Amino acid sequence: MKQFKLVFLVMCSDHDSAVHRTQMESPMCKSIMIGVKDIEDACAQAKQLVDSGEVQKIELCGAFGKEGAQAIRDAVGDGVIVSYIINLE
Image (tube, rainbow, N blue to C red; front, top):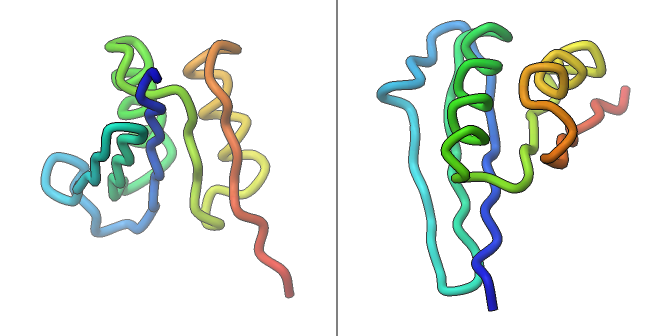
């Protein structure tokens, strides 16, 4: 079975995407978590991972909202699933 690859992006203004990252890996799934400082950083990280073939799905924290999720989608194109957590009030 082919390994599924997922990245979860968490946005906070004091995150440094070069430092704030971790991953878990099993034979079936590789999950990467990256802290990004803003939408631009998130787009760059997502595009790099997609271009290198390291990810099949991108999950975004609630800080992104619909507009941030669309920005990520625009950056990576249609070949990757992009979803985001909705904040319920």
